[in-house]
Amino acid sequence: MTDRLAQSRKHWDDLGRLDPFHAILSKPGTRFGRWDLDEFFATGQREIAELMESAARIGIPKRRNRALDFGCGMGRLTLPLGEYFEECIGVDISDSMIRQAQELCKSARCHFLLNDRPTLPFPNEDFDLIYTSIVLQHVPQKALIRGYISEFVRTLRKDGLLVMQIPSHIKLRNRLQPKRRLYEFLRGVGVSESYLYQTLRLTPMLMNFLPEREVFRVVETAGGRMLPSVPDELAPYKRASHIASRIYYVTK
Image 1 (cartoon, rainbow, N blue to C red):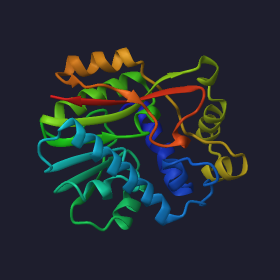
Image 2: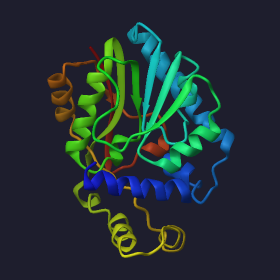
Image 3: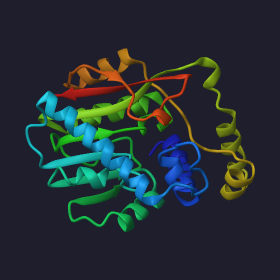
Image 4: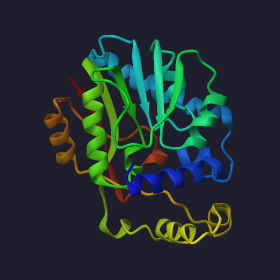
């Protein structure tokens, strides 16, 4: 595990203990435990319903045996994916998130796995559908994002569907992220995560991006075939004026 992934795991474990619902879906007004549990999971139901409508229009995946929810958090998307597929695997870097997912998502079709490596622990061509949303933007290095995209293509079955949301640009003045950097520094010298988050209102949440041309290059190099990409408009609180984001559709 790289040093940056180890640090990312520590910070997401912090968020999983402090404010997991808001960390996963940062809708205004929901910080400090203000998310309604039923509405939180209802957003996942709606998102996956829209995903499957898009998949039906495209005509893939051809099978619905096995799906992957990368960056599953507490299973907000894993659980509804399990309604469409015989099995859905939720993968996350945070042990605190995985434990909560296992408690909240009681479905024989859903399984959760901790993975803090830059690779995926699955064989080639293992999944009919791979979905990742508001996750890759928090991966700490562009090289790691590129590596995960390659892993998605590797583990995608022929005639399967990979759908991934990735910011394509962040304005230069917004890349410094001083609150995140201060959180990392103070946490590193022993200040408690609860004091940093609840009292100082700092956050360890990192925002990253990968230009569209790089996404296309990585997919094609890995053996995938790009389908049309679209602007990210799944939810208004995912968008910000300083971030451009896209949703990519890929098959093999």
